[in-house]
Length: 338
Ligand code: AMP
Ligand code: MG
Image (cartoon, rainbow, N blue to C red; front, side):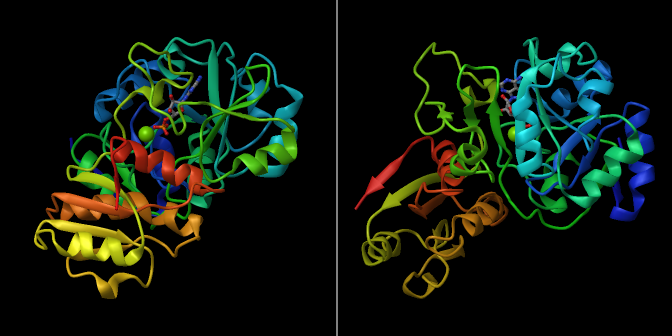
């Protein structure tokens, strides 16, 4: 299949492809999404094929108006907390899990009786959803297991020849996937951290639990509340290690490694003391900047043929929880303590 490169002005073209059951990669504020008509099970099944995604990992449905939830039978009912969350954080990087409605095909929900819904803020994503005239199911537009793409070039590396089109909307601003919160538990529970922090959710919802799979490792045979959490994820081809210690300890450690095949992910301004390839990964303490850079840097390392990536250990505060959640999986939970 020839994959067309489209620009943000081509929303109508993208909408037409989606309406007739095709696949289009679209920019959102979080990461690039691989979109299909969420009401068409066959089109949605093709997303799983293009990504090599396990069929038991459900997708997020993207909308532009709150009314779509009931008018298009996407959910069984709208819990009142959804209106409060929408008022505060929609459109934006927040996905809410609700009981699913009759219009949601099994391919989207992976057979669960719940559905994940998000209203993105990216103007290009919004114009494409509107042009399509249907809600769009869209997971990240990467091959399953690899870091999510935050530029159209990174989408093309994985998806060229496998999907109908890629819309280039420039780099994504958040850089990691949306926060996933479920309202189907007694206390709302964060299944995946993202740009909307636990503190931001607590402001609206009161008590919020954080699923233990967010920073912990699932034990053999343990059931994941969010099926996506059980898969190896976000891993570049290179081996990733999270390194704890001072900058001088870190510099001494990486300076002893092969400079040809090693890359250090350092906080902005720390590059000078390090002899191997470095990529800045946001300022220390600026978790939003780190989120914005993490996947981009991991993919860049693969483009450069790097074998080992050593990452300065970031904080897990605020948006840092999302950074650490992705980094732990990329590193397969490997820490080096200096
Ligand atoms: P992606 O779209 O690739 O960012 O992945 C979507 C994430 O949301 C995955 O981790 C899924 O497991 C999770 N997810 C989607 N729908 C549900 C649902 N109904 N219940 C729990 N988790 C979900
Ligand atoms: Mg994904």
